[in-house]
Length: 136
Image (cartoon, rainbow, N blue to C red):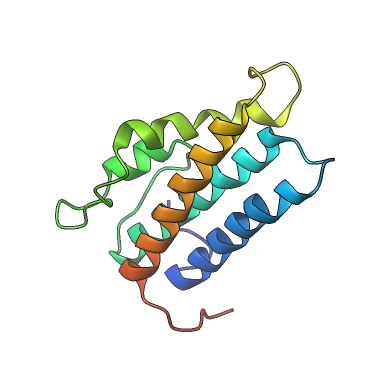
């Protein structure tokens, strides 16, 4: 898939927005942990897509972050603290966490783990993509 925006920095800006929502939403008692984990998953997904775009690699239309991570070139390794298994665990939040009854309730520890993974991946993607201003 070729994305509408070929600027990886734009994708990374969206990833950072999702990460900010995942962090700040915790301060609102009306926001479900499932929703915050969904934004963690989205931050990782958009970060991986930004890196793939930066390397001129196509990717399928998917929310499966494990699939996206498998497309990374060998020379572009994920951070040592983020394994493919950890990423695959986030994929369930892309679909199942959006509706009641589709996923077990998310525990605080699950949210903290998802947030930590997302933070690491977004930071890593920022180093991969660079920090210039995205094109609109």
